[in-house]
Image (tube, rainbow, N blue to C red; front, side):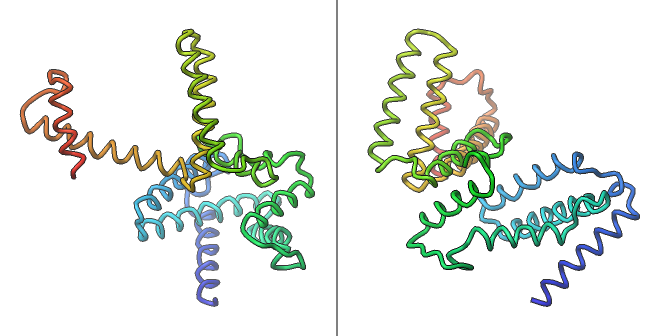
Length: 254
């Protein structure tokens, strides 16, 4: 433990030195760091998907730096410091884990989640959905909304019901597609996606991870296709779909 505390103290000292002496660090604000933090978070997500443990370690370090940086900036305006941040999250964890730090009994993970959401409501939140950031990407937001609703008991009984809903939404989209009303098509397509996210949750799939893996798979195969076409001295625009499909099938075996 002492080694970990010493490492964290070292980061705090370096942050103080950089904030005082480095022209770039001195200029930064909460707002200027925001987009950089988002970028670092996505880089961490990439490393996790790639199962790159060295990459994960490096990206976690970058995020630690950002968290300390925000706290340092806030301390300069006397709003809070890093101790306030850490004590705050510690108190929150203790309060929201009464089955560990109190006498509440739970049977499983679902009981824990349900208690967590109920405690948040008691803390003053008017809706469990208030905890879902407005700026989340839509696919991630859909997952979090459904998780939150499930935490207070608003959920289907089994996955067959959810799949029936998926098929119902697809049928409604197809109906609007025949009508040709783009606005209604968009509404129904959103319902299809939302119901698919719900089904993914029921079968234990993270839809964001699943889609990103498919993105990476497509990029890898398409890059192979481009390289093969270049080797043949051809241009993709001049090739038939059948010719490209033959190369695509080779890419799938890689």
